Image (cartoon, rainbow, N blue to C red):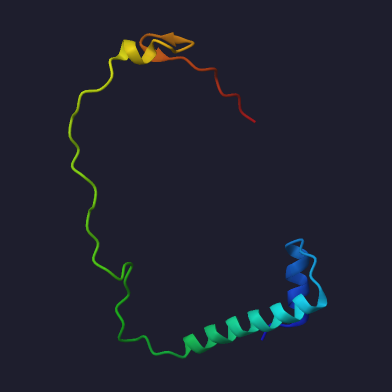
Amino acid sequence: MISRGEIEHIAVLAHLKLTDDEIELFTKQLGDIVDYFDKLQEMDTGDIIPTAYTIPMRNVLREDEVEPSYDRDQVLANAPDKKDGQFRVPPIIGE
């Protein structure tokens, strides 16, 4: 069970201002959640195979196909700064 003091401590850590009614409500709600997890721990899962996915996975991506692209000069036509067929950008200075 979650105590009122624990809820107040969590509220301080999260910078939350809770009313007395909210503290009582959250104490009950979080207590119920923890109790439910305790109940789940009682379940026998020994015969259940661990899985990462509950449904079969299949690749839904399309095949890569080579297609014509834009002409390099056309792409660079409006670039404010370019050099050797590439965009030129200002350097990123570390923090």
